[in-house]
Length: 290
Image (cartoon, rainbow, N blue to C red; front, side, top):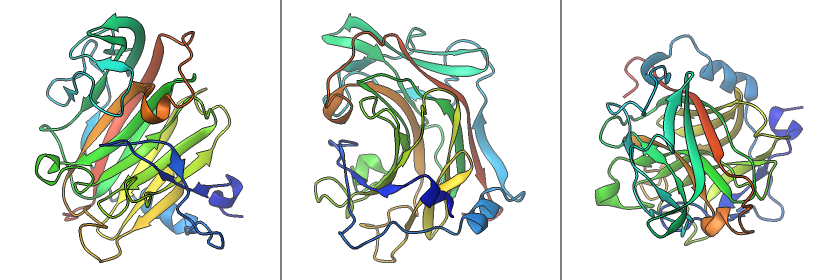
């Protein structure tokens, strides 16, 4: 029996609020089945010794995230979320004991009831094709909304969703044993109710660190959970509206609170401070991949 069947995957689309995310909705018809993956072949490709590391952060230096690698989103950014994203504030984003810890705190801050952090590689690092793996431990609790994702580096010109977005992992605390893996393009997005993705049922996913991976080639995206493939999205050849992923993307990691999806069932005020821990971020490419 395949990994996909063992974990009872359900293909779903996640309705986004502008620039990302809202409640998932299935894109499958009544008689359709989730696409199967050749797990053995895909794992062999993912674990090939030919991958060459091109960028990484192991979070070895104490203090603020490395300013040569990361920048901060600032303010009330998207999705009617309840938190204010701060900039260069250790209480919300700090590196300690080999981990980046993004912390959401219940506190009044510039008109918001919570603070948190969102860090990105925008302007510092972007890439086209390759393999990405992030080892992270998500927080638990109703109202949390952590995410590991990418956006097109041409976002200022192409705008969302034309720039493309890849959600390597999203989690909403009110659905405590589901992890979400999704993709967003001009053709597949919440405005059209056509978003593509999968959710995976995992017992207590917040209880330990897990590895969230992505394999990106010119013809497909494949998402991985703890080294196992869980979903794929193929290049149809119908142009950038369906496949904007022949251009650079940059990385984002954030912990949102509430909002259009994360707050759909309220916020548990007893869960704070909530911590999203990241052990490492690594990006590889094959020789001559670009």
